[in-house]
Length: 288
Ligand SMILES: C[S@@+](CC[C@H](N)C(=O)[O-])C[C@H]1O[C@@H](n2cnc3c(N)ncnc32)[C@H](O)[C@@H]1O
Image (cartoon, rainbow, N blue to C red; front, side, top):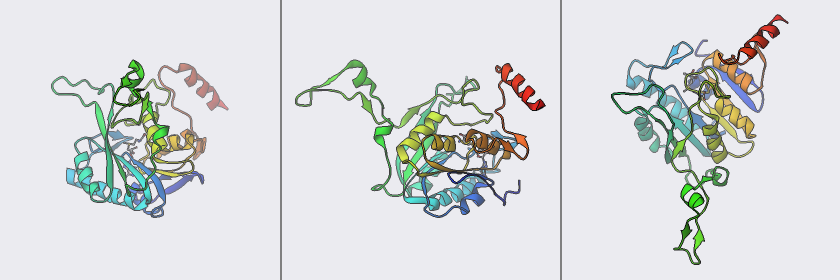
């Protein structure tokens, strides 16, 4: 794919742009987006469909990031929210760059149960950082009531707060704190797609529910398997998803039920090794 060209797919409510984020972002109207979730390559050498996620120098990676970060800010509505991820080693640079331009309301930690490869001579990585920023700290969407979680201390032990008059049972629900625990997407999970860094639906549900309303426009400039657009659709929002790799765009078209064919190819989910019956069904379908 020529990195200067983009291809528009999808429909009015859910647009998919095949192409480079820097080029595609330019084509989006300024101050038109309610919520942006950006999960870029982390510059740690992951393989995205043959495309190595590694820049020649750290400076080159950051220069590239600062360009799309600025574009994201430009596209965000004055009351919009911006969630951005990168690796632990680059997040401090993002933080310093963004804090002059936006208000960083939360520095979130997505903590998961296992680091994949078990480190033996150092402490394995069990989290990824997320910044939650807004343009206007006095005017932004935050639907606290839609993302409540169990307040373990109060709910389980039915504790009574004697500081209140009369004494009251502690709340059984609360707004989540800044450490979020969600399992990573595993091969055997229903939502699994063939992508090295797919984000969990549950993580995006919390973000989309909290920071957007029905019909709002949600943008993901590095869509991968299009988890953000998928969740936006489930929750009645509109979406724009950008992705450089055609194979991942095909996942998005299928996941969002926009097309079941692409350039004559049937878009079917790749069966996993423990799904032999699906492999057989697909072989039979291919005969017709
Ligand atoms: C960390 S992954 C995103 C995963 C996604 N959040 C999900 O849930 O599947 C980053 C994605 O950015 C894509 N990408 C890399 N460089 C890009 C660029 N210049 N423009 C658009 N997408 C790019 C990669 O192909 C990869 O799928």
